[in-house]
Image (cartoon, rainbow, N blue to C red):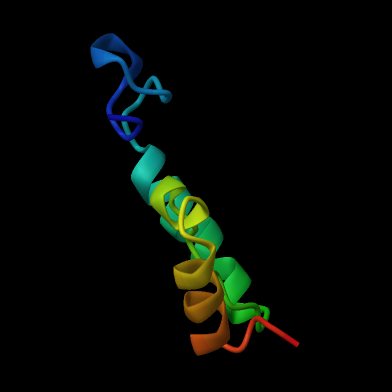
Length: 60
């Protein structure tokens, strides 16, 4: 829903929020960062969250 324009309940008037988010993520990748998307259900299961972070090398 957040990717739709504000006329249908989204957060971006032009409805291009998804593309803007992907461009930001791409810029971070180019700079050498790893982007990990954390979902609400990940926060409810700390073990699964830890496994996901370990899988991408985000834990030291």
